[in-house]
Length: 288
Image 1 (cartoon, one colour):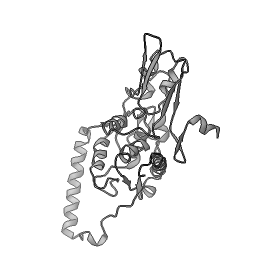
Image 2 (tube, rainbow, N blue to C red; image 1 turned 120 degrees about the vertical axis):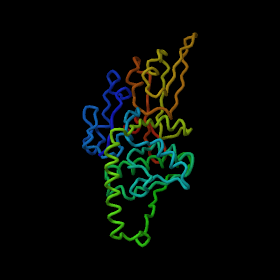
Image 3 (tube, helix red, strand yellow; image 1 turned 90 degrees about the horizontal axis):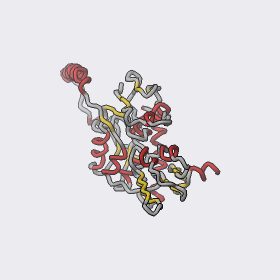
Image 4 (cartoon, rainbow, N blue to C red; image 1 turned 135 degrees about the vertical axis):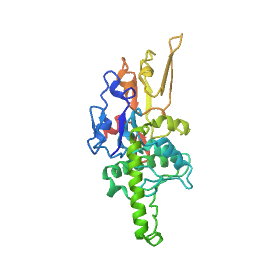
């Protein structure tokens, strides 16, 4: 079972009036209740990490290191441990923003061929995220993510299991199991904030990220910038009374706090909705 916690100092539930339940709603094991992760139910699929808008999910999986390993593979391929012992424990933590951060810089492949039989919810999540990301990549004239099936070790190449090898492996596994149990309490938990990874990666802006519009009657009070958990927005009121603003879409996770907290309703946040390779606003999409 997986060991995960929620860093409440980062969780949107600590923001006044915010009631984010994305991690709870996405969890196929019902392992998240009252912003706590039930260790005996969690299977480490990582879907909570994929949907958390503030990087509040901490786990034993070092996603930063896993993604950097993919970057240095030739060619880069996202794989889970069912295929590659050094791969991610599960690809459920991957979302369209991370796919963009990898594929917009260099061609990327992903193997989800075993996901449907292993974790159907993860397979459905990844299928949708890959589709949306590929629509965005094509709209920007970039090469889409390729779905591949990485071949495992052929049966004829596997070493036969002799009696000696069986007992040697058995006792080795037992010793390894005892060692893991003894070290379990000392295992570090890693906090993974996709925004920080995308920033270090110098990911270019694109249709997978939100758009933000500030209307002309904005007073420049700066509350929106103050509540933004990822510092994606800067508002400055000039001595002349005019308002200057800057917005970094790569840092924006679409949490919506800026829009919710604006006292004048001057902020309009458009989360990405990809349709036929073009991004349309949620408002226009809802009207269709």
